[in-house]
Amino acid sequence: MIGRLSGILLEKQPPHILLDVNGVGYELDAPLSTFYRLPAIGDKVTLHTHLVVREDAQLLYAFAEKRDRALFRELIKLNGVGPKLALALMSGLEVDELIGAVQAQDTSALTRVPGVGKKTAERLLVELKDRFKAWEDIPGAAVPLVTGTAPVAVSGTADAVSALIALGYKPQEASRAVANIKEDGLSSEELIRRALKGMV
Image 1 (tube, rainbow, N blue to C red):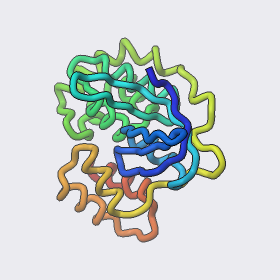
Image 2 (cartoon, rainbow, N blue to C red; image 1 turned 120 degrees about the vertical axis):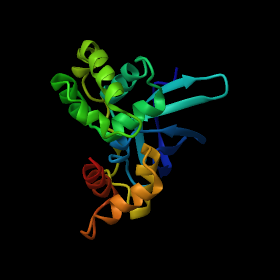
Image 3 (cartoon, rainbow, N blue to C red; image 1 turned 120 degrees about the horizontal axis):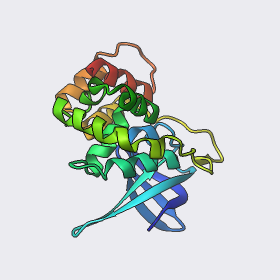
Image 4 (tube, rainbow, N blue to C red; image 1 turned 45 degrees about the vertical axis):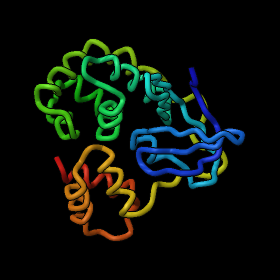
């Protein structure tokens, strides 16, 4: 099992990351919450990982903190939740937001995530209520996500639209949501956040 990688960030295009670890390029998928904290291309980064082995592929998923990875692992244990839906849930909701939704049994928080209908949301909340204590108190990463330089947000309107499409929104929906944000000079992180709120 590959549990952690430290290396140079070569590419970042939500949800995909390419990380150079001593000359070996690792392809990883990550939720938007991790993308928000990535450094600039060429900087060093440390990520916690989870390996999924399938008959046709070996897939690595990356997370900024151990707590995020623990949540991902709990989500994919649930009936009908695969890695793609787990990433979508973690991209649409911060960990603490999801904890709050579970505590309040708030289906509306989950149904704003593409692919999650009311019945699915209700089932997930019931199943998570019994499980979330296991990962709620897990501390954050023992090592900093970024070493050397301060984190910077993914930049560009196109990246924001791509991230929303990766979450499961239709291209027209994603483009319209970003276009509806009239303020100039916003980072991709802020564009994505505002677009997601506007889609609720």
